[in-house]
Length: 162
Image (cartoon, rainbow, N blue to C red):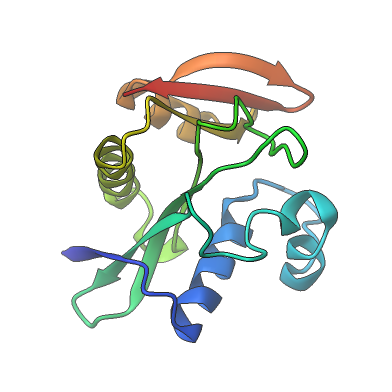
């Protein structure tokens, strides 16, 4: 059992958010350290200055009130494109759950909640970027209704029409 709450922005939650951002980056071998990867120019944009207009995150907690997963979205623009960039009105989603709770439906629940949040916030579409080798994630996104948009390098951009 778990609960999903809005990201409050306190230090512990932000640290967990960064842990989940690191986990969300699919690098099967020789993954750089959290500090090195999150401070690389292509990744830094996903967390630097968090709390801007268009930033939204949800965190999942277990019965013991421990953080076990997170989902978020952020807007990017032409001058600061993300991996899953579509346009400046389409937030890009990121998601990760702790290893010990994977395969129990938490990721799907988080995705459904963030999709509803985006609808409530008035967005028309959502995007995400997923590694082409991450077939389990791609299957989940397909089941949720995400459609292929384009392939760039080793990643696939998918969109969801709200």
